[in-house]
Length: 504
Image 1: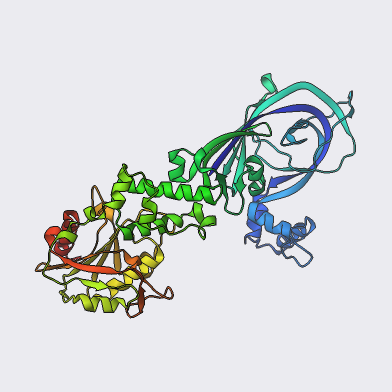
Image 2: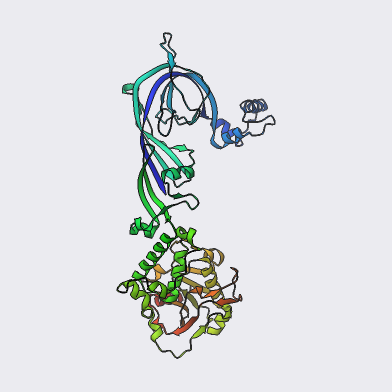
């Protein structure tokens, strides 16, 4: 999220006597604190005494809190006093009474100074960047009364306040101070702001949820783009600022809105493609786990196709795609001589046990093993698929899936199982990604193909440590059906043959 706040600031001007503390860049001290030393012992000792006197070192010549700050930034607080022309806000809606700029002036023998009715805050003053000056924050030192001369002229400058999420922000100023030859042009160098943005955002957006750092919104108020992206842009006013929000993260206002939003997303997916019951259940789980729904995840049910179907209009594409799942898989209508392997609900089996039942015997050096499933996204899915492939005694193992970054995406295979290659299905399929799942082994002489009726979610384990011998429980019946290569998606077959040809 980015936030841009714009406003104009009116600056008054006066000539007054001031005492203040400002930060001076002391590169020589910073270099010394970071390890530079003098060969001359006399100079070295004098430097240490000087740093102790200005409180950079303590009595034991150890760095103080001030010393650590100077070592990090190089800025040394220095007291200065004298007569200055200042530019300041008087009762600004955000800044209050702050000095924004000053320049030293020579005291006049015939001075018409008078007591001025001025009151300044003790902190938060600026030293605006110009061609001749670099920025430094100021801290006014106590003065009971201000004597000087008030200027009738007022300057108006533009302020832009940029937020980078709620982590940091900065000010930039534009315009000039004064008129004519004595005018001072401002530079738009960013000035760090120390405001606690996590507290301030609640004032700008009253419906902001500080725990989840998202804006609570009613589903019916959103356009389709915001419903899909969980983000919106908006504008508001605050303390004379024009506020522009970009990519504000959203969440449902309540559980009812969360269910509406979730069901709308499911309908959108069904408008694009067919989903069989297992794929639909996986999609429901994936949608319920989206970050924006996190506060309601324990209350969002895992919908069944027949339950959801009753809420979908019967004359829509979404209804057809949910209720005609057989159109997904022509292999289901093909008679094959080989006997499918069926694992029934509540069966106990390991991945090595599954591979033994499939009877893979293709162990040629040039063999390639490919597992295709569009949804190998979450960590438990990647752990399961990795264990399945490790049960097959072939070196070249590939998982073809959708690797686009998503909420709850895992990098388990890349980091923990680098011997298994991940390929993005967008590089294999140019157009539509099939919803079938395949386990394929091939070499120059033979290709064995198994179509799998469910995604890797068909099996569960008591904990996350899954290996080839770990017993799991079949939570959804699954069928491994042998098919001929003529029934394999052509783009996946071409990919497999290229891998075998290249011997990689």
